[in-house]
Image (cartoon, rainbow, N blue to C red; front, side):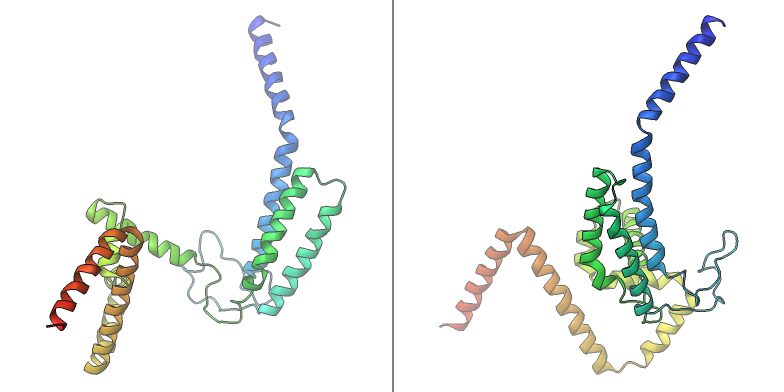
Length: 238
């Protein structure tokens, strides 16, 4: 064997020895990762007998609008989830579980036990989202759009200026059918109802702006209130 081959062989042995040292930790991480995957599988409800078959290839549920709608019940998901928690609880007393796994599992079970009353409340409501992923994605799209327009990453000024109308601005150009539908519904709104909704929108946006000024610009906001109070008092009193 040449010296070059011997050097390569020694390097390979050294790499394998280092990999062997991390084998147990990698296996622990895999087992702990499986806990999270099992919890997600139970909560997504795809194990239900009413669940549709998984999409073929890269086709997703959004690309298949004719797919039958199904809905697992809160009781069904809750019973399965509780049984799984009981089984996972028994892992704490198993001798083969390492100290790190027991510590992580105890924290994992504590988090699930705290969130348990809120995890299985969405299945009896058809069309109600199980997670807020879509809402977070919509907020991210709005922020990205504002970033492309203004070049600013901080969008607090934009949010305070337009308030809840931001969502409408983002929704308006996305679908021509929705635009026509909104125009049709807007024609049916009475002037009195429109004025009431405008007052509610202005009031909500004003309240949000006051909270922001009080939290982030407190000194300036309190000084402005004092000046307004002095001006109002001078107008009321002779």
